[in-house]
Length: 308
Image 1 (cartoon, one colour):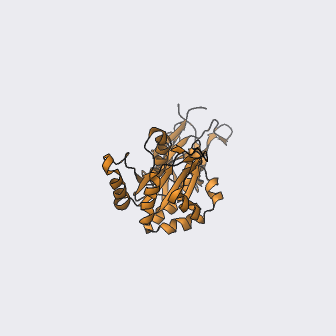
Image 2 (tube, helix red, strand yellow; image 1 turned 120 degrees about the vertical axis):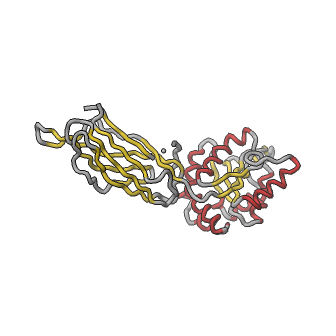
Image 3 (cartoon, rainbow, N blue to C red; image 1 turned 90 degrees about the horizontal axis):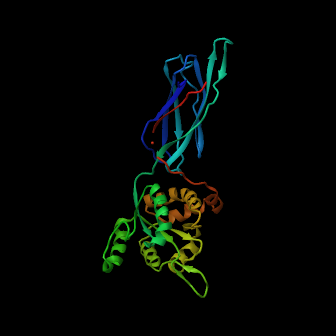
């Protein structure tokens, strides 16, 4: 038999970064003794939110009481579906000793809440469409979409006949995309330098975006040599480039969480230079130090315990 059930619900199915979330909590006493809930806290990887105090006092057997409301100011740099743990202490009243005893076998579990940026922006994603490119490109595209972007790649989201590919690329960048993100993966090996070069077309796609003064972000495999305009832009503005290890995309995901708020602001203000200036203030150490994001998926939940 369950001796208690702690349940909760958030006030909305999803939130935007920087928004205040609200969670209401209840407890139902399923046992035969008086029960008291104390030190309730909602713990995320990005912070702990304690419930200031419970409002119900003791809970009689067979009763369900409202515990209170916790307010969660969400950070600006946190997105997607985030895991949290509910922490609390349950006390049971012992009629024989006339004392409160901490309930044994208490536990915490992982639950989730959705955080997605608004509005949605379109980003032209310059990347390879071969299988070997998509092994890296598809997970990166998903990371980008988590930040409130629709990704556009000719040959993946947008189809075009071979003789219209160049025209379609320019049209998507010029008319439909708010910004461009380049994913530079290995394409050809330079036998002289023994360095891998990125695909040639990223130079043209970067050039179109640069000419239209749209924000550009370059994500470069650490084994790749860029060359051309992307290399020039990365050297003149190092902050618009993130180098990543293809075997550790989790690290890239964490560092993207630092850049994306500034990238979205630059799109909102239609100012590509704003992105490079804002990102420069973050510092390279700050980009490397952030942790990643965990994906799972929901807003109503409950936890119970059935052990004496």
